[in-house]
Length: 333
Image (cartoon, rainbow, N blue to C red; front, side, top):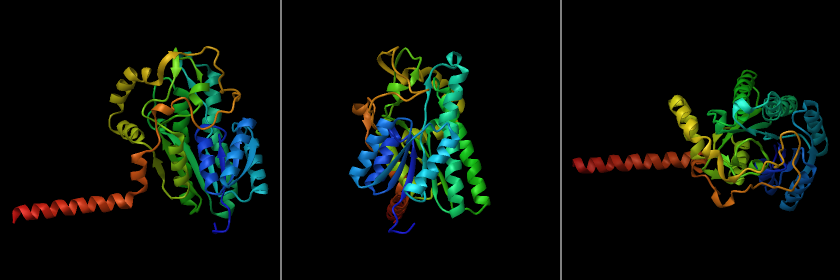
């Protein structure tokens, strides 16, 4: 991409939460953004924010479970904004429920949006990027793509599927010597509106498993991943701990989460039995990026900063090692 060409990005699930924060991040950096989501009203709000920040936006209301609609959206975005440089698969939905209370159609719906929505977006992006031999596809993942937790079986399974699909495709791109880059960003618990509209059978109000981060942390990580050729980006020490804990002691984590995973996903107050859920259709209201946990959410991730500044960390580690060797030599002398 030349410096005088405006970057064209597409974001699914762009009307709220991580998608909304990511749209703002690209907008403030002057990008033209194709916004995909089911909710027309929130897409219009996101479009206004992007334009006020200096970017351009095209809203395309649709459900990512509809593969044909996603491909038509990609065609429209390229016709009206230009060739897509970055495609970000972020749309998701979930159900908070023990497995034995889940319905088959709920598993199917979560899979259609959270996993197949990624597949549909990836296929539409690949169809165009492979022909040009350039472009970036970002899969928005989660620590739960590696380490499942109780009460979110459908979502965890879908995120595992995204990771498997992404690894397979990455191998194929390498085989083809393609310059299309594929990356996955694994996120921690975030303060987004989903906990206020997720379909839930929990007795108390749903919450993200602490520690909780603001969605802007995720947005910065997604933007960074889209512009650096990393295979995978882990955000938050809790994500790193979950992923490596799963590799080292999965049985221990099974027992730990069996004891703590129910309470950690709920907080004070009985759940509203009449709460609207966004599983089957979008919930009304102009919810933006943030959810109900601003007072508890962290606005930055030290671990992500360290991840992006590896060269400085290497220099600091080398300097520390040299200092220790020098001190040892002096003591021997």
